[in-house]
Length: 228
Image (cartoon, rainbow, N blue to C red; front, side, top):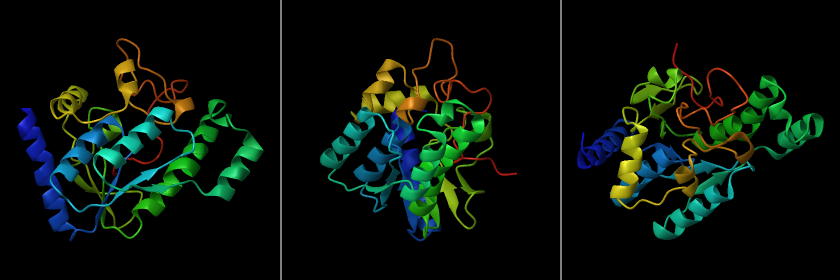
């Protein structure tokens, strides 16, 4: 599939989704490479879809810089959601600021506070939310559909425009359309999350290997799960 067909594929799915959900749809962006592709098409085509993001409090400075570049270049406001302050304070006071390194339980709890709970607020009241997930990222994501019910949020659907794309497709699109992106990608950071939980991917590693690299198994934070 060439770049023009890729572009049109996103456009058509967004149009279809807007029609299906009566325009009651939101784009939840992490400003990763995939999300920048979707954002570019969405704003270039003038789709009136709100853009929300989650600031976990531990993002890379490069991610914040990209947020600002998007705001200026595309003349768009992004609504930012933060973790619940009292819940985060209690967790860090009890477990410490780096407890996610010490047990899977701590890591999942940290992700639940910093990501999952804010996401629930960010998509509340909408019929669907747009993601940048790709099927080839994890075994969980292989089971997803382009439009599917969100198993974590009853009554809400997920729209996955890049589900059948490869990372190579994404990078080619960014360069072809001169889309701004996080410079860490050029340093081997294929999947970018919180700064202490992300490293560059080594030669021959899976692209999700840089997320929570001290853990084994499925690399998910709890935002995306497969339907049963």
